[in-house]
Structure formats: C-alpha cells, structure tokens
Image 1 (cartoon, rainbow, N blue to C red):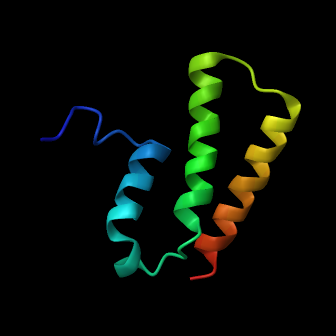
Image 2: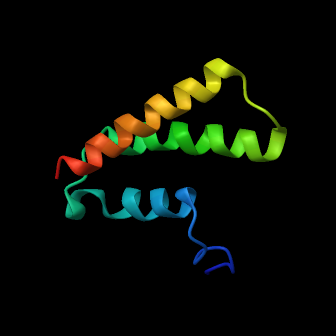
Length: 73
C-alpha cells in the first residue's frame, strides 16, 4: 500500500528505489550503505537540531563518496 509520502522526492525514497532495483541499475554495492549514512545524518539534522562540525563534515564526505559511486556507471 502506497502512502502519500512515497511519491515525495526525498533521499530516503530514492534509496528505497535503489535498494529494490540495485542489480538491474548496475549501482555499486557500497552505494546504499554510504547513502543511508547521509540520509540518517540528514534526518538527525532535520528532526533533532544542529549537527556537530564533525558530523557535518562526515556527512559531506559520505555524500561525495556516494555521488562518485553513482557517477562511475
């Protein structure tokens, strides 16, 4: 059953689709793990408040790594 949020353009929904179609899309197997860390940090920032400098830096580094994995294909 779809919820009204399933069609919302969020990183979480993108990750759901990638996880379900990863092999068909040829996505690197490390991508979901790294992208989920970015998503988790983003959810923390939105729902719990500010991030520390280390958390923000780590999130940016993970986002860069995830994008590099996607762009290899």
